Image 1 (cartoon, rainbow, N blue to C red):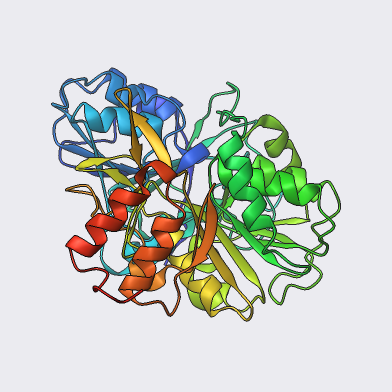
Image 2: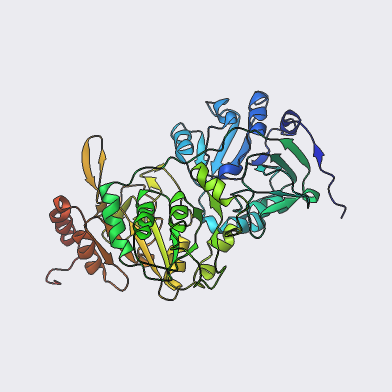
Length: 440
C-alpha cells in the first residue's frame, strides 16, 4: 500500500469534504478542532444528518451554535462537560454509553469507520509526527479507522511524551492551520469544608508507596492537598486524567513513582485538563508519560501496580451500595468515564483500595436532600454496581462494603448519611426488608 500524500489545505476546503449523512469524529477534550469546526458551521445550511462524535467539550462548538434547533447535526458525546450537558438539555447533544478505557476497541471492532476524523495536534516535529497533545485517549484507533484523517496544526498545544502520542504524516490526508487562541482551562474550585472532611478520611488510608488515581472534582483534589501536607512518601501516579492537584502534589516531592511496577518514576495518564500551568508542566516533560486509554484504564493493567488507590465521586448511592454517578434521573450529566474500571483495577491490585466519595446532602430548589437514599431516583443510571463498591466516604465517616450483607450495607451507609436523614433511612430499610427484623 502506498503511503498517503498529505496536502495542506484551508479549513474551508476541509469543511467542503463533508457531505450529508457522514459520520465525523472530533477527537476529545483539548484535541477537538476549532478552525475546522468554525468552517463547517459556515456551510452547515445545505447539510443534513451530519453525525459527530466527541468527548468532554471544553468550549462552545460553532457547528452546534449555528444549528440551535438540531436540524443539521447530531452530536454524540462519550463524556459530558458542562457545555455538552447544556446542549443535551436543549435536545441537541446525546450520550454514547462507554467504559472510557474500552473505546479504542469499540472503534476497532464495533464502530463503522468514520468518514472524516479531524483533531488538533501540535505542529509536525522533525521526524514527521504530529503530536496529539494532552489527549492521547483513543486517537491511535481513530487514525487507524478514519477514511479521511485531517490534522489541525495548533501552535500552542503542549507536546507530550509517551507511547503512541502522535500520528505520522504518512497517515494523514490533509493538514489545516489551527487557532492560536489560549487553551481552554478547567476552573479550579476551592475545596469546601465537606470536601476537606472527606479528604481527611481518605488520606488516612493512604500509605507510603501507594499509586494514585485521582478523579475530577473538589473532593479528589482536596485529597491531593492533604497528602501534600502529610508525611507520606514515594507516591505513584497511574490515572486517567492528569489534574492541577496531581501537579501540585508532585511538586512537593512526595510523588516519586519509585515503587511502581509499571512506568516506574513516571506520572502515567491518558489526558490532561486544568490550568495553563498544568499545560506548561507537561510540555516535553519526560517525567510525564501519556498512553492510550486502553492502557491506563484497563483493570488488568491497573492491578499490576501495588497499593492502587482509586478515588472517585458519585452523586447518589442507595442503601445496597449502587453508585449513580452520571445522571440525574433521565437527565444525563457526565458519563461512566473510567470510574468502574479503576474501581475494579484498584481492588485487584495487591493492597489496593477504592474510594467512592459523596457529600451527604445537596440542595435542590431550596430543599436539602440526602445523597444516600433507600432507592435511586427513577431513571438514574448505575455507574458502579453494588458488587464493586469498596470504601464509601462522606463527611460523616468511612465504611467498607466488601463482604457485607445487604442488611449490613444498609446499616453502614445509614451511619454515614446526614444525621437528619438517618431515622427515615433506617425505617425505610426495615419496611422494604433490606434489614430483617431482629438482625441487629
